[in-house]
Length: 578
Image 1 (tube, one colour):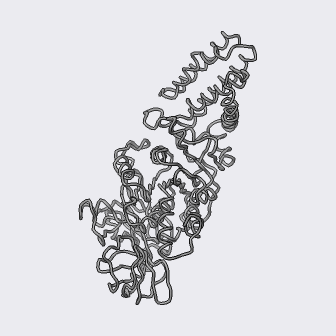
Image 2: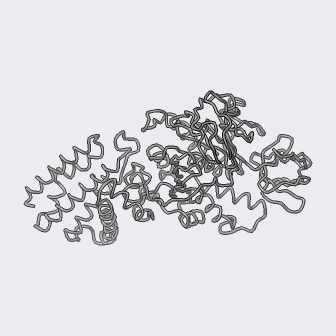
Image 3: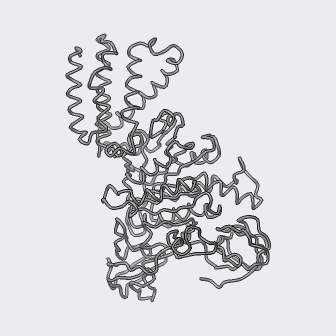
């Protein structure tokens, strides 16, 4: 740590404090007042230093001491991150609770990583090996994964010694010939993205097991998605489903300014959830960053950066990471409050003029990359947006949509109809579909995209026909158009609706999704032939095979179930003369 320089407070405005007598750099961390509250330098004006404090500043007054630490806001990276629950500046909340009880006093801190726990280290390099920053030097079992120990960016040289054994994060596990120690832990400034060699094309999907997402609006590994929606539309449940079922190996969940009861639900349910891949608790591959709406507003702004830095660390080991930011609207509100206290010129709806660039900087840190150590890793960012009153035209939603490539629009009307997930299939979109087409052809089915487009067109046609139905009723439509309404209803109710709480329906593999949609299309094709032979639509929709199709998603052996239904479909339509 650099030489500490002391000054004093000259002005206090909520979480924004002005000090004199210190000469810091931008974004240096300072300790404010007699309570040593942590803060960060956000503005320098002559000899005045403007600081945003990450804790409540009640009772702080001018004249109290301010100390410059000489270092930026950093997080500790190493074994012990998984299963942890941190606040916005990486203070471990369970540790603080053990020290203080449920209500943590101001100025109390604790290291991000446990200094007492010993980790079983197994080296993957040997004496005499020439190493450089970002390379993997060994492994440590952690949670549900094998933690790969990375060299810091500036490390370089020949290994003088390295040995297997049990070490704390403070113990050196080896040494370079230059005398530089090899440690299990490293620190990284949160506002700087971690380096990589090359960014790769997002041409592999993040498989979520949620039919509406995988089939209609897929997200690529290393991609960006936004889930905007009003209160109660299912942002949190969708985020939890993605955390549990997506094929990312590490999950970083940032609860940024959400209500305390929602965050409590996450904190209590996540430890009880079972990781479907290993059978162990889901927390064994999860890091939670909890910053609720009653916590200091400045730490909310830092929490998103803390989360993405932890995600980058696991990406550098070659893991696929998914980061859930719930919600970026609260993060933007924190920026707005700090900006107003700095008396900056406001932009649209009072948000700072740099809102769009801050959102871009955050989302730009995701991606599928080749790491410094030569591995392939990815960070997929899913940002929940909470627009006031469900208004998607407000600045945070609009600026997010300019950046992200997948838009999962949650709809209050679908929620009222008890259609979950309440993702509107007409307003949502994915710009990754063309890039992922080849992968689906090779790994699922040759005509995956054809089936997908058929489903989208059917739903679009239904929307156009609904306008006529509202005017004159469905009976006025010709049989062919009434069939489109029936088939679209099957797609909506059988395929798109999915229960997060049903043991079978909660997760649907890609192969099953394809076969299920193919079976619905087969029914549609046979029904069209029947109508051309003047079979009444009422007889077609009353067939038993249609009812059986609706029950298929709840059956464990859906593969054999689809074959059975397909066979009975052929038989029942043959009886109609098709």
